[in-house]
Amino acid sequence: MQLNGNIFNELESAYSSMLLKSELNRLAVHTEFAAFYNNDYESICGYLQKDTLNNPFSAETLKELKFRHVNVTGKIINRVSSGIFIKDPVIKLVSGNENEQKLLSGLLNKTKFISKVKDAFRKAVYFNTVEANVVWDENKKDMRIDVITPDNCTVVTGSDYLEKIKIAVRKADENGEIYWSVWTDTEHYLLKGDKKYSAGNNPGMINPFAGSGRFSLPFAVLRIEEGSDYWGEPNWNIFLHQKNLDIRLTDLNESELKTLHQIYLGINTNFTEGESFRAGDFKQINNVKEEDKEPKIESVVPGTDHTSVRENIDWLNRLVLQSEGITGNAASTELKAESGAAKVIDELELLERREEYKTLLYHFMQHLLEVIRVVWNYYNPQNRLPVNKGFEIRFTDARIFESLDDRKKRYDMALEYGYKDKIDIAAEELEVSEEEAAEIIKIRKERNGTINNVQ
Image 1 (cartoon, one colour):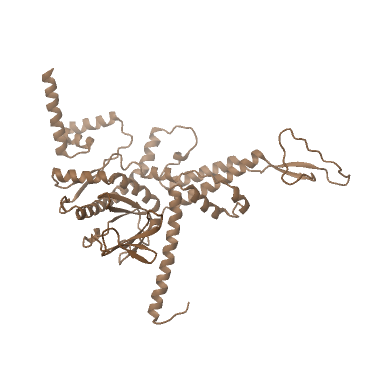
Image 2 (cartoon, rainbow, N blue to C red):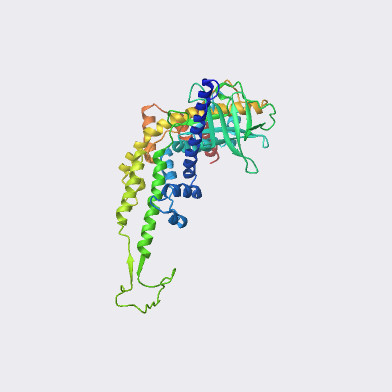
C-alpha cells in the first residue's frame, strides 16, 4: 500500500480498514451461526459442502450427496433456557394507579413482551448477544419489538466497548432490496449503498428520542457473558457440535447404504459403460482366451463397524450436553426410565445457572421497559406512561417436581408456624399483589356467603 500525506492519517486509514475487514468477518461468522439456528437446510448444506470438500467427500460425491441434518441445537437451547418462565412474571408500575397499570398491561400485550423476551433469551444462549429493537409502526400507529441477532446488525462503541453509540440494522424493503436502518444519539436514517434517506416523516433525519440518556437508542441489549468486544463469543460448543454431528451422520448414512447395496467390481467382463444387473438377468461372456483372466464380478463391502460409529456419535452428543450443564441422559436413545432422584439431581445442576440468568433477564427487561416507555410517550403525548415511576418485575419461584400434595403440606406448615397467611399464599399462587389477593379472597367470601344464604 502506498502511503501519502500525514503519517497519522495513513495509520488511521489502515486501522479503519482493519476494523472493516474484522467486522465483515464477524458478520460472516454470525451468518453461518444463524443458518444453523434457523434450521435453514439449503444454507446448512452449502456450509457443510464447503467444509467437507475432499474431507472426506470428493467434488463428484458432493454433487449428488444429501446431507443428513438432525437439529440438536434447538433441543439443547430449549433445555438450557427452560424453567425460568414457569409462568409469566408479574410486571407492574411502582405506585401506579389503575389506569396506568391498564395502559402498561395493554402495551405489554400488544408488543408480546414476554414472548419476545423468551425469544431473545433463547437466541442469546446461542449467539451470546442480541438486541431488542422497539419499533413504532407509522402505518399501524402501534409498537412492536423486533429481536435482532448479530448477523443482521453492526455497532460502533465509544469509550466503553460494551455500550453502543451507533447501531445499523440490516433490513429489506418490499422489493427485496437490502438497506440499513441507522441510529445514533442524534440521528436516524436509512442507508442504501452510500446514500442516506430519511425514515418515515423525518426529513431532518433526527433521532426523535435524543436526550433520553441511555434510552435514546430504541434498543435493549441482552448479553449472556462479557467478552473482549461488544458481541463476546457465541456458543461455539453447540455450533461446532451441530456441524460435526451432521457430517458424521451423513458419513454413517453413506457407509450404511454402500454396505446394504454393495459396490461391484467387474474383471474382464466386457460390459458396456453404464450396464448393470437386475433381478433375473443373465450375462454371457464369449471368446475368452485361455491366457485371459477369468471373468468375474466381486462385491466390495466397506469394513465399517457401524455400532462403534453410532456409539461414538452418542458419546460426543452426551459430552456436549454435559458441558452445557445438561445430563447426558437427555440424549440417550436407550428406553430406560430415569429414577425420580436422578431427575431432581439433573434439575439442580441447572438451577444455579437459571438463577443467574434471572438476574440478567431482570436487568434486560428493565431496560426494555424503559425504552418502550420512551418510544410510546414520544408518539402518544396525550396518553403517557409516567416517567417518575419505576417498574416492578417479579419472577415465579421455581420448585422442582413439587406435587400438589407437597405444595399443600408446605402451605399448611407456613400457616401453622405463622410466617404466612391466606393472603400471602393467594398472592404467591395467583402471582398477584397482596392487595389484589386480599380483594380476591374478600369477593370469594361474599360470594360463598350469598350462596349459603340462598341454600
